[in-house]
Length: 106
Image (cartoon, rainbow, N blue to C red; front, side, top):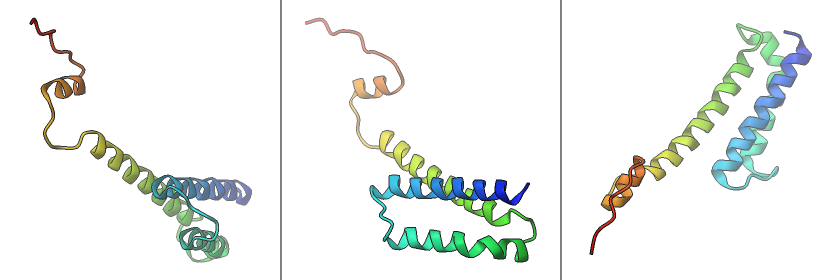
């Protein structure tokens, strides 16, 4: 993989991380400590990745893994909120699994 292709992958991974942080926090400004840290790490590892890592794209893989972790964590929170425990009515439980209750005759 050429360095140009690797840089495209790194930029896309950076965008994924920032996007996931925006979704989880609601807002992420360019002045926030999280954004500055990620930007600094991506810049610092442009050269050191080629010198110190065992594989040429080890840091990109690590960043991609972190982006996937952020996405999965956010998705888990959504699922837990959607299917949270607690008391539900019979009709809510039936709707949850795709069933409908028969109409009650008065």
